[in-house]
Length: 485
Image (cartoon, rainbow, N blue to C red; front, side, top):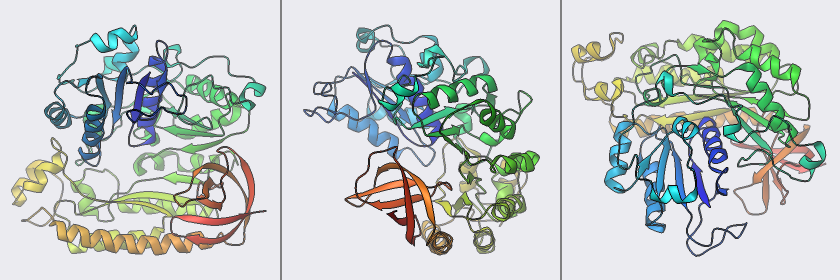
């Protein structure tokens, strides 16, 4: 049994499922960490696994990925560990220090040269303690529709799907993750992901449609279109996200809803109206994730974000005005090098103006090798201009103290939670259809999703994938509370 564990965003989980499909050709695969001495649900991992594939995320730092690595190495010291995912140079160096025998690979390498048998997993030493360069154009992953990825051109029949037969290996029987592209067209100063993933590479629209149909035929009720930046999908092959979405809606039959993945504002503006039209179809969740990162034009320039705060506000207003109770999601970074009190106030003002229902607030942490890491140590305007050649920020003390970061993030969190609560209260009294997803954080509860992809908490335990009619009776900042009808 091979263990595949993923962290981070939906795109990384999608890659993890592709890795699992490749490995499943020669061995059984599980997505659950096997506690030593305890069997998993299929009773076949009571003994040590053949190998671990840790598909890591380091976007917010290396700590979480290193913790997972140490856990695997401590529990099973003699089991080979392979690291994939967003693993930049600084993380690989730390990983080798923590577990010298760790090995590194990529999805592309596995597609080109998959392990031949379980014995080669334990005997192989290639890549041990090595540093692998970032993804090159010739080392791109294959299209998501590929026999190497374990997908079958002929999907399961409706009857087999109803019986829970899964022809497409994945973590959830009811959620299909479809990676539509890899890489991006930006070089944000704080981001290390583009150093690993490289420039935009879009997969074929026809291949994506085939994959979505196979997943729907296999019982998926939710299709997640994902990538590093879905908004620039197709720019390298003469199409865009709106055209892809309409193609799927036209050609894929079945009972499903699509959740569109994260997209940067400047790309969405180019086909805004066409994308808005996509959301009139009930098969699209009324949810969009548009990360703005800051409300300050000065800070956005220093971040090399290449959009303005007003670009984001324009999109936010367009979606909120076109669709009632739409779920707008965004990201904000506080404490970016050089962020002044006035800059922070601009971010707070933008938050209150655009009123997102989901907001990921992050205190800035420098990623080694990025422009932002150099900015944080800059002490003069000359340093700053040589690093970015754009920003007009304070001339000294560019690093924001941790105490200030915590204070600002707390202010943003308080304002956001009040906005989210007010947005969610608009649902009280509504009757709606939800699909159950997973057990709730509170004992004896279940989390479901409504048509705007908002989490709905239900009293009682329900199996995943069940469609229910509920009435919203209460609301919290992060969830709606409902009773069955």
